[in-house]
Image 1 (cartoon, rainbow, N blue to C red):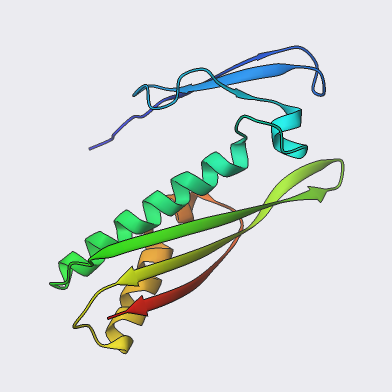
Image 2 (image 1 turned 135 degrees about the vertical axis):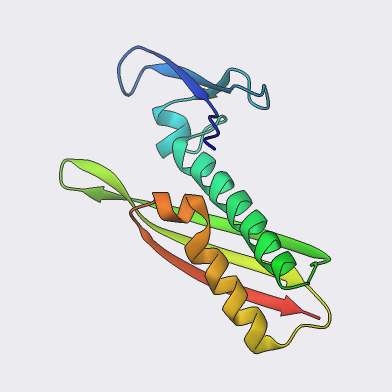
Length: 143
């Protein structure tokens, strides 16, 4: 079974003075602005790195929930942040690192069992598999 999801982007103008909008097929994002200034100058709007971060955090949290469920556990909550690093790479840029930080509330699980499951989730998340970057994981388990 193959699932298809679409993201759409529109761009007008040059790299520094141009502007664009992004949208998602679902309508969750509709013509959200992006551009050089939102990517490199912290102006209002979005950028590819924060969207990748949001997607990675969501994917990892869902993968962890699935893998915990497969072992009979249900977390009270999973809160994950993905800090995406964009670095100069020759004449261009590369996403070099994603630092995942997850705070999980899950009573009744042994630390060793949780450690194994959360690391499987990091490796098994489809977005993790997609990225050609160093992916680190820091987590806090509250029981």
